[in-house]
Length: 305
Image (cartoon, rainbow, N blue to C red; front, side, top):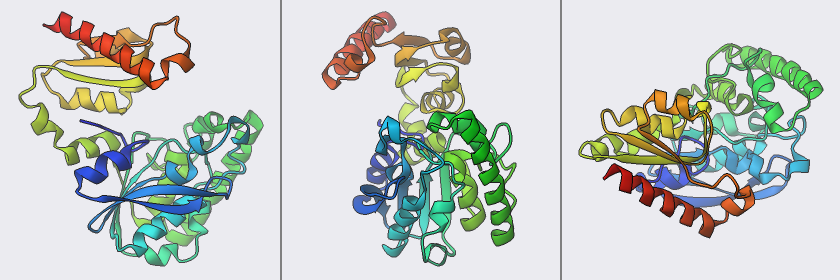
């Protein structure tokens, strides 16, 4: 059962599950260049991944600068979906290169009118507020390439954006949990379109019928690229563990740190798939990764049986 938690892969997982189709459109990338982005349409439901338009993966390491990157392409993506007749939006937040509080998104002409009256759910695993010591700029800015000095500039911008959202839409997103997701996109979507925050992995598991699928299982195997204590803060593997009830859950991960915390959380087995001596570039080669997974799964099932 392919899974996603609102980040990368959400469109590819949910669109077929909902009986929909993938659409490709040209939007602005984080630096304003054209990029081909995809979203899903299932009836009047749109499945959006904001990283398709403003993701870190769209930039080289030297281009990462959240003082310059914009969410304008997200607004263009939403507008395309609205013009296609979508009135319910599932918006996955994750993997963004931006920290503009949704200012770029809101600069798209006609977006507010096109999305008037829609229902929107934002899928994320982040409960960060818009501003403050645990807010978007200070927590996620460095991950997006910001220096300590730039983080303070970003924080000032986010405070100004929070004030604008309060004046324009009547909602103070400053301390709202989840408003800081995706560099403040969460807060902008809440204030402007009444978006409701939900756990990305739980929403995906609900829509895929996970509970029914696991009801007669004797073992669940899940995994991720790297596992540590952050896995337990709403990531996909943690969601699978929580929803599997009494069924044992084995975690296969490319790299494992803090395995004691993972076992204490309830995983029956934690397996590091890639040998520690193997360079990351080698471990990420598809054929090598496939063989490593096969070897680890075979050993796991031998122990379980």
